[in-house]
Length: 268
Image (cartoon, rainbow, N blue to C red; front, side):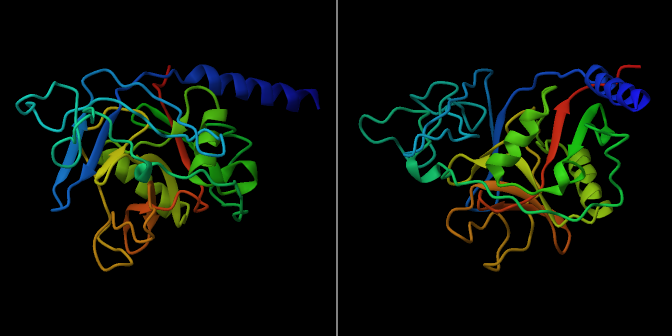
């Protein structure tokens, strides 16, 4: 019994000391109405706010900041500021684009149980399931009885792991291929990411530096490519394994597992 306890404690210490978090620079990415990709790069200042829903609950994933959508600002605009449609109306401040229509609505958490996956090894990998290109990844379905979560609870699950873990931000093609490989290997139908919708065509990763890479799926219920906002309130980003692995906008109260990551490096 003492040997087992010592093993668990040693493994926990190993997992905590083996990975060291590095900070990233948040960005916004998206797709325009004509299908062209848009990236809104942060000039270095992004303040995360926690707006309150009418019920008083904190909305996670909401960020209010000032960004610009192109290399040079138009006449009269300051760097780091943007509005998403036309010219601002009188009294409207540039950079304020979190309208009530773009804020996800907090929903009560529910959880479902997923079958245990034969590739999971919680005893040997109590926190970190895979390491890829200097990042540590945690697969929620291998832990906590295989429960699935709303987008909000998925984010909280990752944060509760400590060590800088957050829901995965897919910033580069290599990482996207890694995530797709995980879904295929573990035969997972879908997972949550940290992606959330900020405006009509703009999406935000919770952490990390992006090159503007996107991989929206070509399939959707409305017969057009993602993001299609098929339910009229699809403001959270999932990776779906159906007719190929791709990104889908989704209602935030849909129940899914999540991949968590921490920007880390392997210490020899």
